[in-house]
Length: 220
Image (tube, rainbow, N blue to C red; front, top):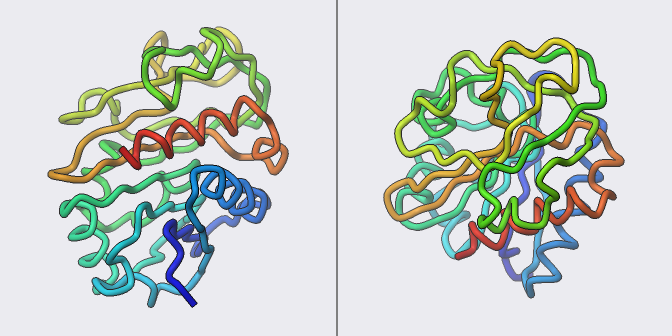
């Protein structure tokens, strides 16, 4: 069987989101629309130099806790630095808590969230493929993630979306609350979106357009 172009990794060692199957299905459909195949796995053995070779994209879909072996960490870092692409979705902000490279890659760490509630997303970069399909102000329900440090302070981070903290209760970052950002990593590309908590998110056309645009940018 041919190796899928897109590896969707769904292993969890902490909280497990009910939305993971919906997210994996949506990503497979979005990949297929771009002429690519996608395969989901929970097996850390997929992360080897040979296992990642030739992959167009790796997705960490709401992974939590330590989900990679030391060998897998080495392989993923080499893949990304060598020109690979990595998409981290929602709770992937809470993955690999003791891996310094991943913390540097994210530019921050997950630090909790207020209760799931309606809010609003503000587009910061309307020209980026991951944010161009969204309205300038998008009413949305999600977990509005808080961070241990401000993502914008990290080297190379380019913010795409922000939260309007006046639209929900419990935000602590004020007017500048990033929700999605991207960066280059040597020859590779990385994009993180904090959105995507609920199963129904992955059936929403606007959120799917956000993910599809992320794929377009990551695939170059």
